Length: 574
Image (cartoon, rainbow, N blue to C red):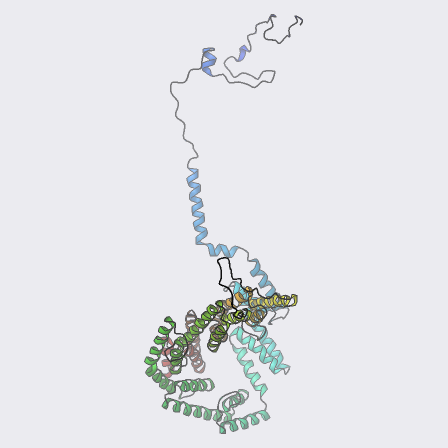
């Protein structure tokens, strides 16, 4: 070890020259040293007091409040106010959001309108697309205007077809226009022109002869009855005196039949005769008096009808749906309908009986008794043959495995378990056919083809799918969703003023979901719409049209006070 020391060794014993440091900045902040060491701030006590310990201040100055403390409450207040405004104006804000699907449907509809694809059944026509847009947004102005333009275009098509001598095609086009426009001068003009085009002078003589022969044979109503034949003559030749006189004779004959039914207290025959007379001659002079006599019969039978309805409801609650004897719900509701054929409550009661029978059939089928389930479904089919639940239950019955023959077996032990028979596997061809049927059914439902056309309606297609696979959940759910689709179409037709079409949807709904209490409200809405139209017809001086509208309302809700009041106004001539 040598005696040489390193120059930076603190223990080295060499001479070190003293330095005083930077005397110019004794009271100020020190400058960074040239060796780039971090600067240090010397506390005043330490700086002035020397190397002693730093003295703590005798008191601590109060902390100044933040000048921005009010910003947080203000921000929260603005957020709450913004959310409140958004909630109050949610409909307006929603309308500002672009509806991609709706706009696409409207654009396609306008394109189809320009290209002349006005109506059809494949989902690509202008009418179908605009109606689909109305389903997405019932108050959409573009959809409403598009349907009006389709109706006007159909009027033009009908006019062109008539000019070309294509009377049947003109009639078809005019029917579509009438559904969309609800009438109008052009529709009325073309209706008369088409009727006139159908009847030539030679045909007029033939039709008059046929009508006279039908009258002599006592055949007054029907497509080939005297009344319909005389109407065809008058449609083509309104001034034909022979046909007009013959039609009056038909009215007199029908009125005589109604009087006989009144004497026999046959409410069903009276109602049927009055309906036929009102349809044939809505302005027939004796019709108000016949309606008054019918009302008297109904008033006399009202107590009996109410009693039958009450007994039917009691039988339903007690579980006496159907069977032998006259103390079942089925027997009581049928009795009510015999007294009042148009009684909506009695019809709904029969639908409830059908639904109860279907529920019983499903329960029995769960127990494996296919024979009893089939018998119950047969009874339900007699009351509600088009019920969606009935169709699903029928399919389930067909898919259920047959009960195994009874065999002597040992008593079950705790380890035994019953495994239901697995459904038969579908072949690849059946699977492909099933998938096609389900897709077609979904497309038909989307187009609004719920019950029509036969074979290609959603109802028929779902049933065909269940015929292949009775346990298919998609087909069952599809069937059970059809009533709600009918309600949507009913609402759309009512909003468009298409009252006849709304009535058709209501009839389909009563077939699909018999006994549904919600249909009473729909029936009243449609009845009031018919009465509104009657008011408009009467204001225009169209008394015949008003009578027909009131007849529609009366069939829907005969007990509605407004129906009775309006009927009294018409009978009084006001």
